[in-house]
Amino acid sequence: MNTRIINTVEALLFGAGRPLRLSEIRSLLDSDGINAELSDIKQVINILEERHDGSSLEVVEVASGFRLQIKETYSPSLTHLWNERAPRISKALMETISIIAYKQPVTRGDIEDIRGVSVSTQGIRSLLERNWIKVSGFKDVPGRPALYTTTKEFLDDLNIKSLSSLPELPEPVRLEDNELFSKVI
Image 1 (cartoon, rainbow, N blue to C red):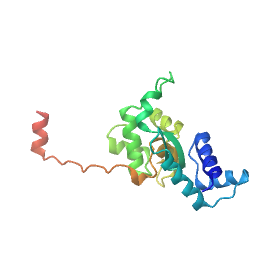
Image 2: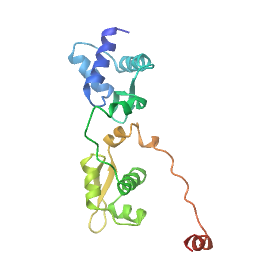
Image 3: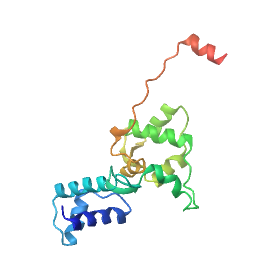
Image 4: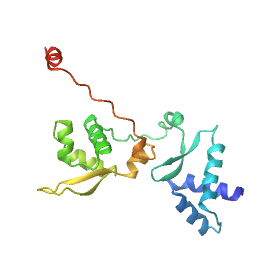
């Protein structure tokens, strides 16, 4: 394989700051005067994966495409570079995004039924601002509530390729009435 193509694809993945699809890489190569087929670019990705095998970097495929990133084992070393902290995600917000991810598309009412408590407007707004969820439509019932689904950015931030990569949900545990009363007392 031509080293110019390999190095150019590596530079694109490094400099993009976001995942790139194979078709995007091909058009960027074309604009640079390099003609490559999608299969060639996939082969280059495989070469880059091998090249970075023993390093602190890795090529990862996520929902939006491919990206060059630092391996998770080295991420604690990077915390000293930035003083700002990412906003923490509350337990309620984690429950909300989990319900949306596993049961999508869902309405706010569906989420409240599953959680058993009301969902704050600020929580939904926070997930929308992070671009982790989007309004995918409206349910055809009175009031026409919004239907929420997760976004590719959510999958990218979780470093997964698709929703099928989410861990399996555990089976719900059923307690008999007498067991429930004994736990309360």
